[in-house]
Length: 596
Ligand SMILES: [Ca+2]
Image (cartoon, rainbow, N blue to C red; front, side, top):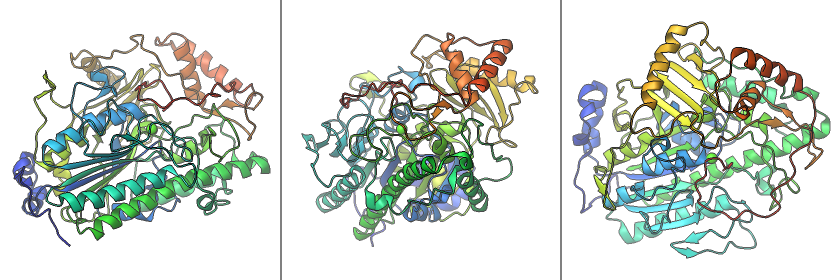
């Protein structure tokens, strides 16, 4: 098995020369020499869509993910790696290295800066993209030598859509025997083999963005059968099982508190047998979707081994945003092609274990992703989780470091601002501890600041919450009222951030706010008449606050909203009418207010 790409003509950088931070880190220096022995690594970035923090086995889940777990066991895994809480800002940060709040809300529509395919191709890489793009432009026309996938924010796993293309040409989705996860894996494997045969002298970069487990929740019956019945123990037990496993794995250490189930997600034991059976089916189907991704990861890894390139290939695995609690649109019979079912807020809460809230929020459950980096030639197997905070925008600077290239100062005739992220390559190559920094998060009026072990966060622009991450990593005890001094320090950081010229999006600036009030529907009824209750009083009142005009509410108003939310918990109401009768054409409109 070859340990390096033996020759490459374009770049001659050695890795150690690129890491001045290594000089600061004795441990890192030990590995610098090893890194210097290797030329540019091959790079594979695998991303899932809407998967919760605790679903995969190595982060606490009971879902069978041996291949992803093997990546984690053989490499480095992070406990505080942040995405951006939603598809488009996360993908924009990954693909372009830019944060959306420094540009336009439609940051995914970026035509004026290079994507990571263009950057790495410029460094001598053969580049491949497979899966969900959801950004501006067409990958095959910009940055990627090979491309297979769809362009919009999601696709039906059984039916696909009319945006699928293969190397720039329309790819009609087969009428039979199509499953999106399998098709994406098939093409990733095919590209790896073809590119290795034709261009073995060049390093390669593969970006594999799975659609799963994004809604609609769909999986082959044979895969669902492996999980059917396993979730009858219910979300209360599954959550506790996951948390205990996280403790055993060393992921949930001191300071990781176990939040109680929101009162309006019913205790599992109170469900009817019919409801339990339905909820078992939907979580079994979701689990099967994740399982199929893992099987795909296994096939990609096996291919790398068969091609003799595994040792010098960096494989990164992550997810784009927290579990999705959306459950408003239900159409058709669950599990069949053309339907629109979600996994539901109760299972989303379980997927998020033990973090707070879900997709779209900037609370920990919305923005924390499993993050695994495996590079056999360089990264030794590390049992412990790395707890340093990083963001998706740090990935492109890291890949550029490893590829021995720099961000172009000009692109398309336009001067480019420096990337906001920071390379964590020294962490990968030498387990370095990088200097502390402040991290900022924003998706409209959902914001957070992380600084020196503290986390200040708001949803919908409601009063800030303050958490001491060293004692309360899971955001269970709000200290905003009891520690006003620290709150003021954090507010000063946030205000300075929002006055920076490169931060274009202001708080409450009138941009559309995604209203977001997760609900739990008590049974499998479809459409008008189905029962629903607010799933989470805290989020529900924050959503009510958003409807009130986006201003900061007074404590009295908040108390009234809280009272109203608790009172309405358990009451029933009409489900939203099905507005999705026409199949929405997939598009790359980059609208962060959509549910993709
Ligand atoms: Ca997503």
